[in-house]
Length: 289
Image (cartoon, rainbow, N blue to C red; front, top):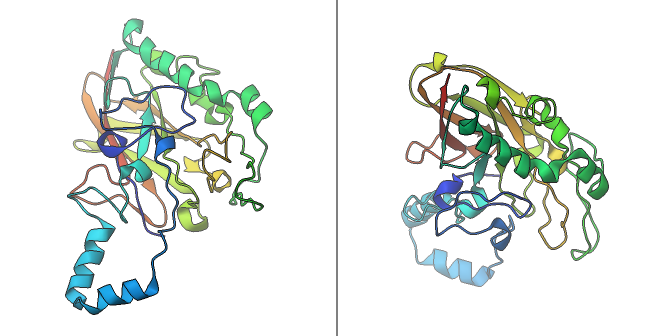
């Protein structure tokens, strides 16, 4: 499967499971209004043959190239970032996270935002609503399409040092902020072709030593296969989107550090030079003492 993932700030949307409002442009709408299935609409064979018969191979090749990535309409495989988006939390001031460690008033809003967002991930809530699943394999559910589907638990305790349990400030009081990343929901999508998609971060531009250490949770920063596929808001009512926490434990202080965090996995594109937000997300950290 070929997958493009683009930045939510450009065309994206928030998931139905979120409890915190995502910073959106006037053109952005909630994800649960834009859920799309992976498969394309059925087309008649005769209609397809008739169209192909009137076109040269060059025409068809050009159309295929545009279909894979159309920079004018900002679509990939004919879909916009409403389907292919990724997002981060907290997101209070666009994609810049700036605060001074010695001034709690500058980082407390980020902490409050994180606690609010993670309320739906509380261990007790997850235990009451969802089930334990087998890690490392897709959770395929048969039966009638209209039947309610079970959802796998994603407990905030999985985020360890970024759970807000042991450290209720998520590292912000120490100048070591946690940031959460998640992918938008796509009905029927099985990411990674059997291998979990992972997250990696680096300095987007400048001296690589400005970012000396990042820890990822859960595990090594992967989206477990058991949370896929997603069956849609109507039947997958308790579905909780999996998260990857990025703990920036050693970032240069008193400096603007542009960070790029990318999704890595089979079928994922994250290196298109004409689009900084395809398969990745870029934000700035500014941590004062």
